[in-house]
Amino acid sequence: MEAKFSDIRQAYEIDKKSPLIFRAMPKIKDTYMAPIMRFAMKVNIAAQVMSRTVAAFLYTLQKNTSFNREIEQRSLATATFIQQVDELFDSFNGSQITPPTGKDIKCLVTDDSAHQSYWKKAFQIIKKWKFKRFTKQGNLRTTKPPSQIGWLTSIRAIQYIWNDLRSKGFSSLRPRALNQDALENLFGAIRSGCGDNPTVFQFIGSLKTQILNGLTKQALSGTNCEEDDNVLLSNLKSFLHVEETHTDSDAETGGNEETLSVAYVSGFIAKKILGPDHQCDDCQQLLCSTSMEAQNLFIAFKEWTDNENRLMYPSENLVIAVGHAVTVLENFIQKHGGKPDLSKCSAIEIKNVVNFSWFSCELHCNTIIEGVIKAVCPIGIPWWCKRQNRNIIQEKKDARATKRKIRKFKNQ
Image 1 (cartoon, rainbow, N blue to C red):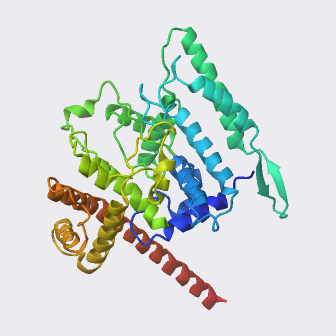
Image 2 (cartoon, rainbow, N blue to C red):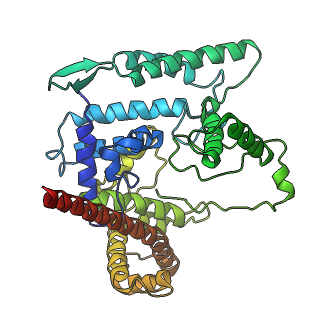
Image 3 (tube, helix red, strand yellow):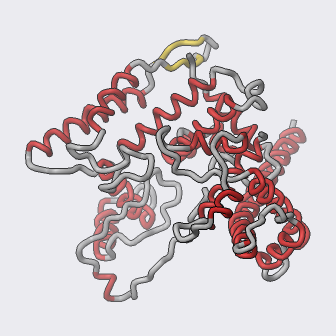
């Protein structure tokens, strides 16, 4: 069977139709569907498009009778290919001793890890890949792109490196460190002060400055590398500046198309409310359900293993309540977006409008309802703002494109 990028575009268009702010693939943007110029060189874009979330959504569309007419059966091959690429990225991106849940090969390479057996299997799979593209004459021909050859070379190289290190007494290898990001960050820091083409004298001077400053973080927007976590052992700049601490506030959460994404967020909310200390059976039955219910199909495909359910499956009543709460929130922001204490005012509006009568646990009724409402607002408001910003940016782009067309028309 053939995998096609058009399947991803089609799934993205279906996901975009959701009238709610929650989407199944929230990180995917319009520019990812036809990457040009600098976007075509971004590894993080490839990693987000070729991710388990996208594969899970394609599987869901195939399984759901509401969509399997809109998307071809062939898209199963596309979902399988995406999942293979996602696992490939994971095997080269491990930095921790213990892998994240469901990411068994996103960890350090050791004698006990599954990397060796996985790479042997992946090497044979990649070798069989055949890519088709149209020539300038419009003919379809089979090609072997440099990326395919590069993956085969990388697998052989990392196997050789690990065998060599193991023979010298090393017990583990951090595959995430095998990159040139540090060098790219250094060159980016040097060129940011000296231009794209520094002289030898400028290069040496900037290099000395960067070393003395401990390669301080600079605005390297547009570079094709991730920020590395390495620091110099000695940093003279630390004598002049008080160290700043930053808190990570980017935690993201991350039937029909809107129900699939709302159910996933509802499961996140249920898991947050029903923490390890909440032992009420009534609350558990009212907020949770099984993976067999229609609204939980996307969550089931997001599971990391078939043997154990690690994700939370929300009840139909909770999904309906959260979906209604999101609709109320959107309408309220549209009318009163400039109000102070927007989150607090939105929570009051949701409590007054949304029907929570289905939640019948007298002991925890108020606590659970407040928990659901307080969870919806911090998730929904930023997502609404992101979507509005994207729409504004797109409108500006369209306006500029229209002006260019008018100018060309006038000059003809």
